[in-house]
Image (cartoon, rainbow, N blue to C red; front, side):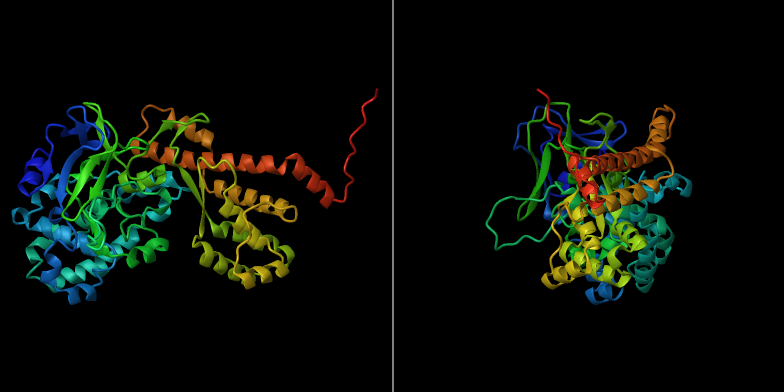
Length: 487
């Protein structure tokens, strides 16, 4: 790590070494530190675009040939960038990125590298389905291995067992997953000036938002692969020096901006001497922080307890579909439900309902989706003709049924966890708990907390005076008359 800044400067990078330094932080690894008080708007360093490592800047693609590159599908997803990084690493001192690659971590605490027993601790969370280890290894064997064997002049046979192994593939993929940025080509038609590409990613759009740490194709669930493949894989780049900054929820004080020839890290608020310089990965939930970076964020929460304010829980839409099918309301058939789901996907694009920790009410999308499933045949024909989803509000006609389906669906999702939240809290009180176990418990407890809170909100709505009145009307009961006060 001592050689990183000298190498960076030797390659045309500019660093304000009077204010900006590197330090090792307990539990976080290496990061950036303010050596002096730094004002807002201060440029900490500038990275030349030519120093970013991508399939565009690496010579391998030209040497391999773009047609052959496409033949092995290396232009799809991130397999091509991983291969570029493996090739550059194999060149050792002949690669201009040698010192940079040597500074990157080779050990990760992410679930990609957990044992089967350790992964059991994440049972029920949304993390397990997104690790994508099998998909990553399929890319390695179906794309990278055939490409490497086809060009022994570029990938020396004596290098194969050292630089091009599955283990190195996973390491390079994890480096990309945790450290890469989207660096688009400079659009000369735009006005001159700085354009933000910092890691300020919307947590709901981490795969699409410009300029942040990215998801690795092959380490994602298949649901996102189409979106990833439709983007230009050449935009994904490793950005030396920018990726050394750590991140923590709500702590960011610097941001990456790009210009025509360079990328600049600029402070977004004053930073005191000795403080860590933070970028942001977006306000990500602990499930994503653990999957990508191998850590979690824990804070005191406004409503009591501890957790990450950005936590979410994902409920697959088919949980609610199966519930509706099981009771077959109003003659709704499986075929009709498929049509309704197609309309939902066309109009919303989501097959997963997301509930956020800070949701004060039932998410509108969840209400709209369940209402769509429960439409009478006549109302469905009208909705289909208009290609319009139901409004996200509880009505007198279907409000009780909607609440009942939502409650059952949330309970089913909660039941996927093998332990209770009380059991999780008891485990977290143990001082000798291994870090991986602790992180897994924090993630699953966070998801359970959200589900339990939302179930309470649904219960309050079901038991509200207005709802009780609706129940009596539906049961044919006479509304109780208000008693006159005696005088």
